[in-house]
Image (tube, rainbow, N blue to C red; front, top):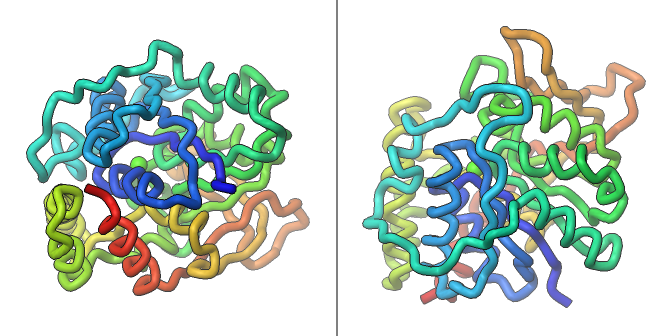
Length: 312
Ligand SMILES: [Ca+2]
């Protein structure tokens, strides 16, 4: 039986690849896609999610627009990384599939109450505003969630948007705190993992060589995404963050980490959004998350390329 998931997202080129990976994989059933403000404002992330569904030949999917700003702060975006549209690189179009009228937070709550307990996994790959709002408004859904597998945070790599914080957690630390204290099984893909998942030239060439529309679209996105990251990190390629969550659902053996306590810094202006992971077990705080630390990068990109080849 396919694993039921909701993808909560702020596309974002790497979000788009995560969505494509899920839609290409028969082991996964995407119940819906919920958009949140993050990399770019909500009006764009919602539209980009529909563009990606149409690219994958899935205009039947439900895309819901969610929160347009963090729970208690002004929105911070990242056009300097993702471009003005959020999906800069390939040629984009005006999607014709409809946006659902139901708010994403209501969709998340209704879906978790409707489906049997312990069967729905949430995959947040943007700021945690939609998920945090849903948990705050309907605490009864927490024990019904099978698992939350999210991209966010960092320990050894520390930060990418500030010296101390990763973007998704930084944008809405209050929402992240709700998620990390929700008591639901939590698997975290931090920068410690994604900074080892580099889109090298040969890996990019393998995607471009698929010869499909999806392959060309993805290669154009990654090529754009790369330029910023290579300029910033000076590495052999940019990190491909968000698809690690979906890859984990498909092949958990690609990843390794530790079950530890993770707390979110919400008070300090200097370190706001820091994920304080007790990697070395120096406190007696109870573990609340499986915090990943490493991945088999070649296995990850092989999985990704093989799956993308199945799309039109
Ligand atoms: Ca994202």
